[in-house]
Amino acid sequence: MAAAAVGRGLDAEELGRLLHALWQPTALIEMGVIGGCLGLAWAIVRLVRGPEPRRGSIWFGHGVVDGIFFPVLALLLVLLARWALKTWVPLAVFKLAVPVLLSLAVIRLTVRVLHASFPDSRLVRVVERSVSWMVWLGVVLWITGLLPLLLQELDTIQWKIGSTQISVRNILEGAVSAVLVLVGALWLSSMLEARLLQGATTNLGVRKMAANALRALLLFIGLMFALSAAGIDLTALGVLGGALGVGIGFGLQKLAANYVSGFVILAEQSMRIGDLVKVDNFEGRITDISTRYTVIRAINGREAIVPNEMMITQRVENASLADSRMLLNTVVQVAYGTDVEDLIVRMKEAVAAVPRVMADPAPAVLLTNFAADGLELTVGFWIADPENGQGNVRSDVNLAILKLFEVLQVEIPFPQRVLRRAAA
Picture (tube, rainbow, N blue to C red):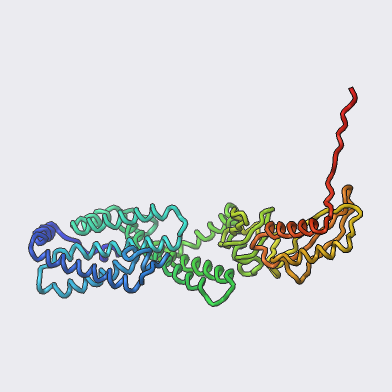
């Protein structure tokens, strides 16, 4: 339990002796040894981490001292030094340094795990401050000897739920245990997810699906352990599961449909990260597929968050599912009387010379319409890299056709209007 974990603290007499020992010359020796332990821990972490920072690392963070490795290593070195000096000098500073370093390790663990699990969440900063304040408050209460007294008073506030006697102390201890278990589950899921996303398979969608399923499983197992640690009878979850099922069937059916659709998309591989798709008149490349929504980024930089249910129930045009090649068209008119047959051959050669236009299938030019002002020619050509843009390659094709027409002196007709002034 939490009370056993923190120990019995310090009573008033021990606190007085501690304050007296802090003013002794031996306290300077302790401070020097602790400073040496901190410097040694910093050097070891700096050597292991290397000169370049490891972005997103739980162990190292963005710097040397903002990860988990530094406070844990410093705590181990300080404990070792305390064991070596306990027969030589009276320990006073060590009694303060050990809980402080332990609290720092807990804070760093919680913060780094939350940052790695929810990198875009604005609530992480609020949770970080809340955890820091609670941990430091617990350290102060433990050092001053007030924590055991506070826990005893909280243990007297009890009430009965069914046949179970519950106190405020049980709730607090269960909450602390639940938080530790969930943080551990998030940490483990983050490490395994990073390994999965760097796996040997080249299909990022399969790895994403496996990572999402693994995180959901670990969080579920962690939640079960957390509820058990909080003293909640897990057999009562059968009724809760039935109520949850009814809630999903009525109020949360859209949310549940999105989650199920997300796993279906990743399992069927009908849409993969990197595919060029068009859904609901929005065209772009899939940049992420989560369990609830899919992120589509257009060429102009706009992003659309599309619920996964829409990706399943509506028609989705996927330009990269079986073949990434794409057919593009452009239309031009020439004047009546132009040698169209010879012009078509020259236009095919000009379009084929554009760098991104594929040679196989070759460009095609068709006489598609006898318009009022001229003969309408439709130019069709294939590209293999639609992710690099379509308007730019169509512009290159139009410029090539325009240069050809200028060389051959082919007239592009346009409507003309004659204005006559009425006689006065």
